[in-house]
Amino acid sequence: MVRVYVLLFLIQVALAACALISCLSAEKEQVKALPRAIWVPVILLFPLVGSIAWFLVGRERPNGPAGVTGVRGPAGPARRPLAPDDDPEFLASLDERSRQEDQERLRLWEEDLRRREGELRPPDERDRPEV
Image (cartoon, rainbow, N blue to C red; front, side, top):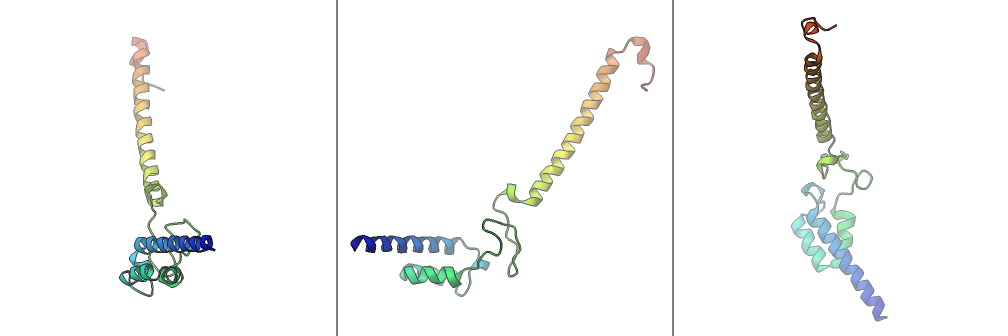
């Protein structure tokens, strides 16, 4: 019987820790019903009830599939991606910059190739224009 109580206590502590971390890491717009300054003591003083209350009514539930960011929900601003490689605007700017650099590099290679071909021609053909 003692093992059951210890297991239930550990589950309660883990639930309270998850609720506290969730509460403290939530954006200001995601905290509902009470201010964050009230939720933290409720979770700490009443770990089981406070944790369950936080997950049920204290936070805004995600609207999209789990792990999807940058989605605009019906009741709130768009969430920013967590990393630059998840940001579509950043990826588009990288693609555009890469495309421009590739075009410039190709232009320089073509100029270099024309110059080298001109150096390899016999002297009498150098004066004639290229076809």
